[in-house]
Image 1 (cartoon, rainbow, N blue to C red):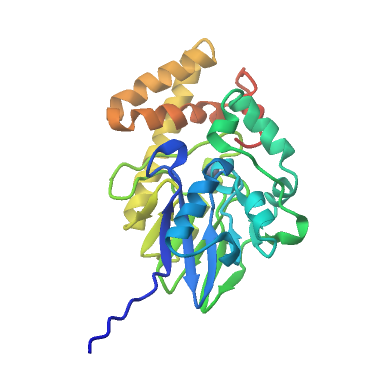
Image 2: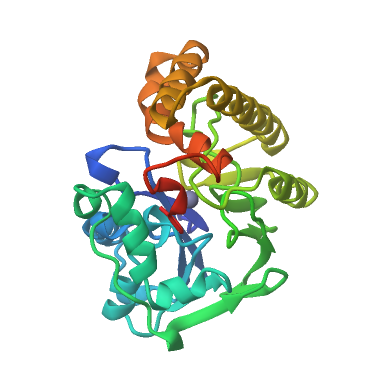
Length: 307
Ligand SMILES: [Zn+2]
């Protein structure tokens, strides 16, 4: 008789198939000794896909113990309230600066509505509040337990002032949310994720240091999946982040208004980016301009609390 030992995967990438596209938003399913958590469940608009992904693994929302939020942007955390409504036992871990907006997302949604006046529902779906009793407030520095796994919580601002990362040292994995930008698993291009208004390039540097000094073997990015060489990844990301910031600053100095600055930024970026990445750059790149120019005349975008 032969026995086949099937090891339960400790970390599984769940593709949320955001707006029908693969490899845009990833949730990470963590499993240990019958306990399960999801890092960044994604937006409300992909809730059904998330359920489907769990079903394919013979799981349901009721089998989850916790949601570990890296930050509260809608594409990461929007589904949390709906998941808690479905499973009132769920603990939702979030940094203290983000927690009030999970309990009452009205300000967050109002900001997002300014950015996406006609498309918010289609892009991100509904965002329900998370009851205060389900919230577990983080400062950074905590160690969380999931089954026999331990996760170190590290405060990693830069992309957002309330951003944390989770380190599973046994697995050599760091769940960094958007702290190290966007890189589609299996591809080499690393792209900054720079939403207004609270990106901070100087503080971001400390977060790179905090990540690298823990020497993870791989990063898990919400956009999208694993990146296998953290030192190289962060180096590329930092270079591009500062390059973009410089281009944005130059564009703003020479342009007559925000639209012209944005057009100039995109024209310059287009030269350094292959067309395959172009659409993503159009989606993200302009945010550098707004985020780098708090006093720049704007159409309300820079006033957004979050996007
Ligand atoms: Zn984000």
